[in-house]
Structure formats: structure tokens, C-alpha cells
Length: 78
Image 1: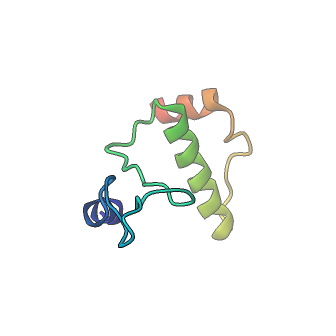
Image 2: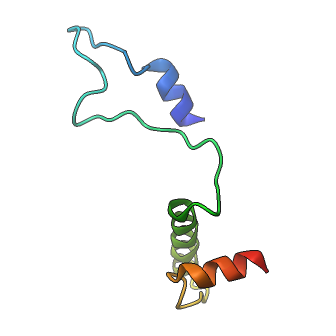
């Protein structure tokens, strides 16, 4: 919701007080993700990486081959 609120407050065509575009480098507008698709390699990699990060933080064992997309897909489908 934070991204949607930010885009509502500062739409893509928003201008600063000086009349310059609000979204100009180094600022880039965020792009909300409508739905997570586990078949999308980018989404699957993000989810796997986040899960491993959390497991490392909480000292929980995780599969050492988590980077292998074929093994991730097999464990997702089972």
C-alpha cells in the first residue's frame, strides 16, 4: 500500500515547486507488483532469496541448492 500511496501523492507527471518533474534522476518512480507469480523467474528468485535471508537471520537450516531453479520448481510443485 505504501507504493500506491506514494504514486497517488506524487503521480508520474507530478512537478516540484520549481516546475521540474518530481520523478527525475536519481529518483525513479516505484512500480507496484499486482500479483506474485511463482512461475516468473524474477519473482521466484526474490522469494527464495528472502526465505534464505530470514532463515540465516533466525539460524534455521536451509537447502544449500536453493539457487537451482529446477529444484525450487520441484519443491514448489510437490
